[in-house]
Amino acid sequence: MRSKVSVIGAGNVGATCAFRIAEGGYADVVLVDIVEGLPQGKGLDMLESCPIIGSSVNIIGTNSYEETAGSDIVVITSGIPRKPGMSRDDLVATNSNIVKQVTENVVKHSPDCIIIVVCNPLDAMTQMALHVSKFPRTRVFGQSGVLDSARFRTFIAQELNVSIEDVFTCVLGGHGDTMVPVTRLCTVGGVPISDLLPKEKIDRMVERTVKGGAEIVALLKTGSAFYAPGVASAQMVEAIIMDKKKILPCATLLEGEYGINGIVAGVPAKLGSKGIEQVIELKLTDDELVALKKSADAVKGLLDVMGI
Ligand code: APR
Image 1 (tube, rainbow, N blue to C red):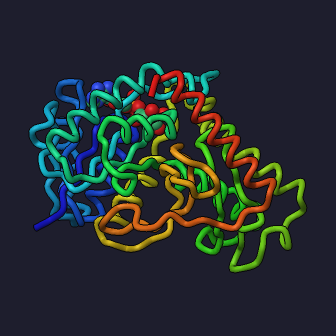
Image 2: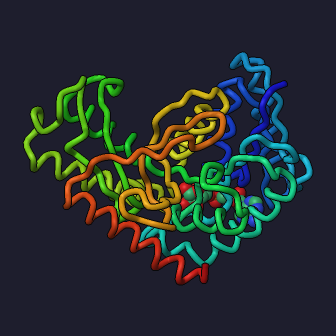
């Protein structure tokens, strides 16, 4: 039997993610939204593209959670995106209510699922989904690091004119201003980027990565990035469904790792059929640890705002 993935929110990120999963051909997809006709229309359009892309999966769109029952994975993308001048944290009041209500419905219909949170502010929304679902951390985590490291990889590959495939980056911490790109562990074909680029250039790329979302919001003006966030989320789904044991940066609840307890932060984790199968604790320098803790403190501030 094919796996089942539900994507909540049939907007830009949700639809991109759903389509990427459908292209992968490894799971049936249920697309859910509150807007009548939107998930049905997008779902049907995707289904009609399957004969062309050569995928045999089923895709349905719906306004109800009944069709999501028994999902293996649920990706939560429902929420408002940023507008120019807004930070991700400005979304907290609206999106935390949406995530709370969505998670309650998800848990009711798919009590054994794995939840991947994508809406912003990402770390706080992941914490909200953990709080409401009462699932263990292995089954509730967020997508941000895959996107942030992809952005950093793009800039490095462009700068050095090398294949994107050869670039590895390590980005920890929160999805926002407190992001912690660990440049010491970034390599091109196994060579540290500090051997290939001057510090000022690396610093400029770090800055661009941290503000990567805002750069796109400023260009789009009416919404935020969706192609890269959508496919980043689908990559996490694929790692789980295919039991790849892939090491990806995940926004995960730390339980003492890195000296942080009870707060969600982006760290490398092993993703397989059980969800997060291992949280990887890198040996960080004192400065890197301080930056990661600052990131966790910022999330803590939002938890206080949300009252959880
Ligand atoms: N249940 C289901 N769907 C909902 C709900 C809800 N309670 N509330 C809102 N939605 C739907 C909206 O109707 C919309 O179709 O979520 C969708 C969001 O889509 P977009 O507005 O296109 O936003 P998108 O760009 O996809 O971003 C979604 O992901 O990257 C983050 O910051 C971004 O928080 C934002 C989220």
